[in-house]
Length: 438
Ligand code: GUN
Ligand code: ZN
Image (cartoon, rainbow, N blue to C red; front, side, top):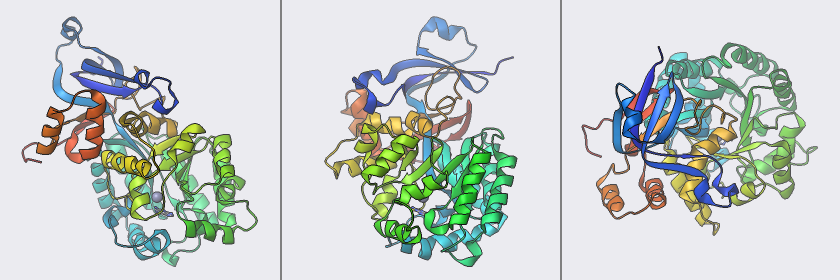
């Protein structure tokens, strides 16, 4: 017997990248009154509502008045930094030494890692995020704890143990050999278990010796299906530091490229200060960027150049980058992305923004055959949005006409209060507490 769920509501989802289309109106499907049929955790159909079709099903869940979109995809975040979000006053390198490393040292204790994993996964779902690419800490047990929690929810999550063997406190250092063996063991244990996948995670070039990067590349060659997840060209002092540590390499991207760490399943957070040659290398290697606007503004790192990425067809996903990022909410993150574009004299349409947070994120993580929109056969990860969750939103939407204006106002004014319900693989895993006012 098929396990079937049928929902009536408004729906919007994307079919292609608005930045690559001649006519933006062909890039999405909006159904003001639609019917979604889910069978065994997968999308069966999404059609305009008609009474005859609905009658074929014993029950239809009525969510009229809400807007259902695919689950958000966060392409870069650090679960172990949840407890130090919003730490005052520093730019990247001082911020890491002052706040980040002492916090991450606590994940030596698996009980602490379990506690924060549960909090973190709940925050994802509460913010409508159904998939994420996540940094653990240097401790393998930090990744065990996160994967255990995600597996319980049947989430599509990608994560990895940090590889880091220099330029950090001793208690946070591994060795090239131990990082290779620990990562290999985690791949064997977790990659493709349920909906989980593994990412080889060298923190960034300054905290790995050439020997460690070489072994990371060797591991990727042995397991080509796993991801590479790291940071790149976030901050100018960081870039100068990489130049001094790797004088024989042409630049920062070339360090990773040299060790076999670039490619279509390699995700680089930030990539703010790229040379023309590095942009070309991104294009040639089909590597991916995670754009993390709240983090880039919070740490004063710089303004990401989405326009060049689009013109070169470099895939870009949206990242919250908690805890340098200041919000778990992809809506808040898009709000800041819009302002990053404004500061460069550019626009970010709500369509492009929501594409990046859904199908664009899926494409960036090469999981667009599985999630990202409501094409039949995909896994049913989605969010039920309440567009009028606050008095201000109610007023604003009562004067709004058209889906584009509504989506833009949602991005500017929205946050976790707008997440009414979150579904993972066809099951409702989060419901907002509607008993207290927002
Ligand atoms: N570069 C190296 N590590 C980190 C980190 O934890 N956060 C950010 N934003 N950048 C990094
Ligand atoms: Zn990061």
